[in-house]
Length: 219
Ligand code: DX5
Ligand code: ZN
Image (cartoon, rainbow, N blue to C red; front, side, top):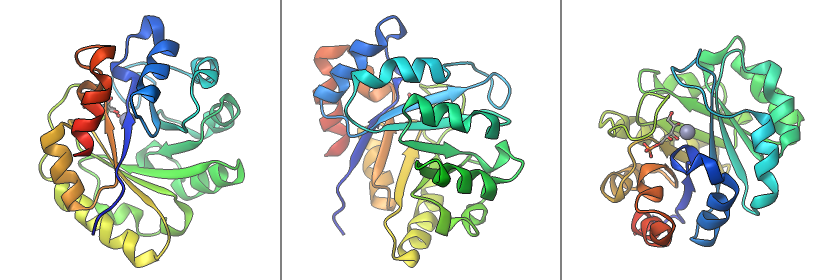
């Protein structure tokens, strides 16, 4: 079945000294979503950006901000990211304590709730959440850093997520994040993904390459 593939460049691989211009450039180059990786040095071993930066960047883009929260606890920060201009808020069940309540709260804020599974987290973790989410994200690397290699075993999990999404009859995006290249993109799409996060593969070569890099992932 042919699906429209959405590309979500991860700004983790952008030039942080000129993030506003980088977002404008990827949007012009064909990005469908802006993927923002939020890390706290506690849930994951890296620290990135917070709500103030999201707010500053928001006027630089027209496309939705797909905000991936790798922070624990996550609940105290949901309102701040919503106010800053996030469109989707995606959370890890491990960020606890109550993933179901967290997703309900994101919905109440008027944002798109997403759930994300680490490579070691079984697919069953989404079984009681399907009615609450607009996006399921399968991590194909362990969260924390860009530039890692795609973990093959996650292809089976993408297939399992696709079956669960199709069974709902609702539109739920199936996103894959980590180690996406034109080669792994093809395999993730074949397994059922419709949204691809890519940092390294989009930003490599600098702004003159962004359009070609994004097109290569879509093919
Ligand atoms: C990892 C992040 C990813 C990462 C992807 O924790 O969630 O979004 O930036 O980077 P690449 O595409 O380089 O693997
Ligand atoms: Zn991410």
